[in-house]
Image (cartoon, rainbow, N blue to C red; front, side):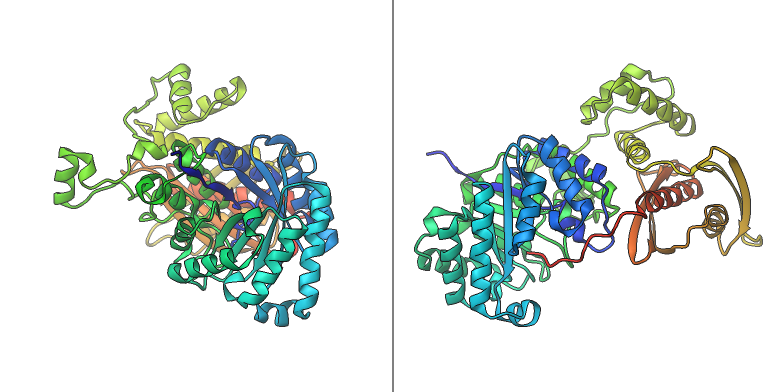
Length: 517
């Protein structure tokens, strides 16, 4: 007997973007959406169309270009939100409108400030309006795990009768534990008379560290859609990490007896892309995609792995697309060798892009004798950044003088928007501080540096350094990334990347702050 299918619903572009400090451009959202398509997710929640013109534009662009998966837009249970959602997704090959409203007493009383009867009417009206636009309608009672059960039964019965064909039960504040969640879902199935007319979905937050466990427990109880984010991004402590949910279902098919449409070999690359674009690093001991996920330090473990991998590994690293770093390129490697290796890593470049990548590769190979797969991934990330963010100002030259008895001094040359070369110098408390002060003297955009992080891309003293920074202006965050074998140069690149992002988006009205399901 064939296994059931679990629908994988990705909300990285909606709930994931609401992680504090993330702000994505339409181009970045499109790049993530296309990778989610390659991964094989069934539903992409592309955004909250009514929240801002920028979000509407991004949802609309994704709906028009990404054709295989269902493209969903979130909407509050107010009719203008539903209208905006439809306006953004109406050109999708498979559109879905996802409506939500608070259902718990605490949220109805303190957030909506309405009575339960009004909330019920709003929910049904919104589902009916959504159903008039498209057949695929999802409904979420926000804070369902703290909602009075009798009210929840009545609300779910009403929205299913109005046309909702997916019923999502969100643990909005990460409150519940797996055994409680299973019991709540069982009671819902038993007490909602028309429940067999809808797909049961769950959306779990990780405030108590239970998001993945709750999601998997829900699958046991009959949920056939699971919502989450790549790398567990999302509000506060985040959502269920989709890569963990997927590999849980895949690795323990004996237990769950379900399948998905996911190409697991795309998991690692998807994780890296999302981390790179958002600037949110993946912790080394993160399950599935962390740097240490398949590394063994214990002698006993190493001995076992050498004899038989299954002694201490329950997953094949290659099954999630983990790079093997076996092929090393160098300065004598040609364009064809680079193209072949990039294609093996999942990068299929047009001729012009390949030529640009090859020039950057040769510069790197002159400074670093051996270029590994991880170096190539960093190189491709750097190339993507130059495409995603307009180079309003370009970094041309960095020179720093510093030492334990020296005053750190930086001399910087940049190209301004008119193509003129400008040079200035500054001192600082350290070399990076001096670099940033020199750049500020020329660019003159007031901002506050809120995060500065350096990561080694590979091991060894010749490792590429990857710098991530966040700057803020008018309470809006901008992420900058830069890579180089010289940490100071990487820091300058990251700062210029963030400043260019700020300048390119400064005129865009910021998205409204909205509640999430």
